[in-house]
Amino acid sequence: MNMVDMNPSSMYLANLASGTSVNPDAWAMPMRMAPLGRWNTMLMGNGFLVDTQQTGPRGHDKLYSTNWMMAAAEHRLGSGGAFQAVLMLSLEPATITNRSYPLLFQTGETAYGKPLIDAQHPHNFIMALGFHYTNEIAEHTFLDLYFAPVGDPALGPVAFPHRASALEIPQAPLAHHLQDSTHISDEVLTAGIQRKKVKLEASGFHGAEPGENRWIIQTGGIDSWSARVWYFPSANWAAQVSAGRLHHPEALEPGDQFRSSASLAYTKGRWSSSLIWGRAHLTDTHANLNSYLAETVAPIARKNFVTGRVELADKELSVPGVYRIRAYTAGYTRDIDLARSFETGVGANISFYSIPESLKPVYSDHPAGVNLYLRVRLRSN
Image (cartoon, rainbow, N blue to C red):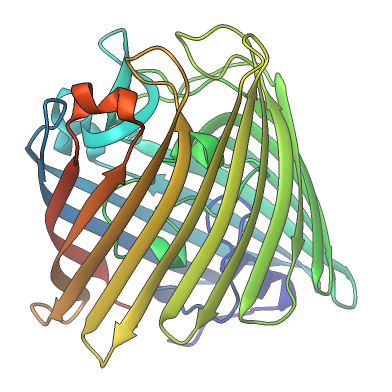
């Protein structure tokens, strides 16, 4: 589909993922593109219908759906500038009942006034509502300004729903709240400048995690900050280092968090991989929670995908203390042709966990979880 009136700033905006984050340029983002008058529109969507089965005393079973859809409209402004509006929605508040789905050793946010443990919260109905202005102020030099009542500040890697290496894994990483949980934040203001292979960004935003009413847009003052540096050695690579201070992010935990992150992403063709480190320093207890993630999706022939995710994450669970959890996930997706406009597939993944001896009476010696899923994604035109 031919787009209209695109300049270098327009192309800059077309490559963004959540907020101002970016996958490697070599990744072909699945999207539908079409001109609408003098506007260029883009539509993306991804959804899973998942059946989860888990072992052990803390394990649960559930049928649910994780999903999102994002629409963007871009218009050229003058010879060097471009404007873009982005709206991202999710039906997870309805398709994930009882405010969570089972995920062993996951923590973060609340449900029914209690902290979530061994469960993952749904995303908000409005996952993002943001506005970009970008201008090529000199050759190969771009100024990017971003405001989002709901959006993603300059902190951490590309969030897992948008990350190329996570595209075939329906469940969130255990390290989500140590690496990329700020991808749904309120009152985000970001300014960035990119010169060739280097991009510098800084953000102010409201640091609290979303509340339990997932259907509304929340508000709050700008009380947190972050800064991020990107480096793009080539079209196949994207690396970032970032840090930020979050004011009282968890509703039931006192104190602030100082969060640090570094990541390296690689894409070649349909193969994408990521290495991510994230750390949260809790100002109230002075604890340092670290996380490490390696993740990949690799194609085999045209219709087959093998996925893997390995994590080490420090967790505060129902048993007092900080525990290092090791999680190993392997999966397979097979594409099936059901509709011309959608990429549909069926697949499964299995997760095994290595845990400290003191947790085995609570979780069993060999806790594990299996996910069976149907995946539906908008196909590129």
